[in-house]
Image: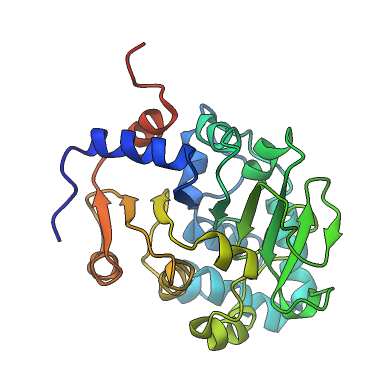
Length: 285
């Protein structure tokens, strides 16, 4: 699959489309590295797995795999240990960077997909009252009649479902450290979800409605693991727009195959350059 021509011009067009609400940002953990300071939380599943393994002993063969590491700790030290560990790790909320703040300023943007556990995007949206969040929920902690997910309004109060009058929905498919630390992390967390996700059952109705006819732009994401690819594929399904991904040149064969299979056009520029173009920081006055 050929890379996109004129990546800067393409990103400028995507920036305008995103501001108009026609392109949905799909954020990965590497977005956190755009800030001027070192993030106070791990950036990516492998970094998180290694940090967890440094605090609770796990077999060396699984220390780079978040879901296996969390499952080992859950099995031998109880689920409470996993939840407490992740709550401690993600208690610091990273300072929202220029990309977070720009996205939060787009009042026509109907949906933001944020796949990491941190609270930076939520903090960037905190100045608005017309938004809410919907997140994946572990089976043990679902507290409403709505299966698979939990919803919170702009004041972090839990509600039964995403409100139709929210201008923007922040979707955290793997759960979130804030407001109350409900996350999907271990293999057992994902068994039920992955059984149903091809049928779209775990995808919130608000997400299914707001993605219709939209394109997606992947930023700060890697797809080296099947779980990451499966979630992305199912969130994209039935959206109907053209999709793009800002990616490095060292993609694995599985990542390249995923982009090709899903019709995602790669944009080979650095994430920092892409963020500057999208937010308008690199354009002449």
